[in-house]
Amino acid sequence: MAKTRPIFFNLFQMKLPIGGWVSIFHRVSGAALSLAVLPVLYAWMLSLRSPEDYAAVTGFLSGWFGFLILLGVVWATLHHLLAGLRHLGFDFGWGEGRERARLTAWAVLLAALALTGLFALGCLS
Figure (cartoon, rainbow, N blue to C red):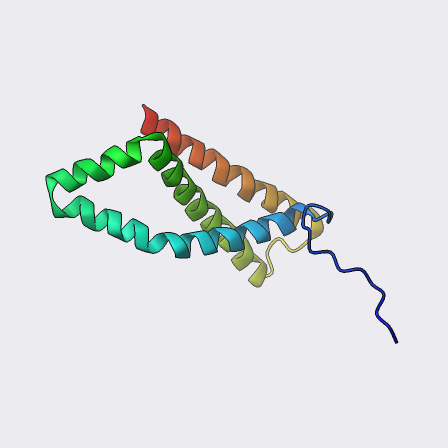
């Protein structure tokens, strides 16, 4: 029997529910965090080495590019944590219904963005 089913790998053509997007972002944020571990540890090591290196690290992070990287790491951490707690709740049988799952998916997305925004406002003030 020939398989004639189409295979779609373009996520923007697929109609994913919001929970699917949260799951994909959970994986993306986990991958981003695993890639960010070494640069973050290196920056931390530099900041502890000497006052000059501390000034260099804080100078980089206070620039627009460093601040954007910092916000990306903060968002990835918050989203990965919140989505992980959501998935852990599913493992316990909490929130598995369609409406509750949709509500928690939106809550994860909005909470991660809102907390990242609060962090950004705190850094800018």
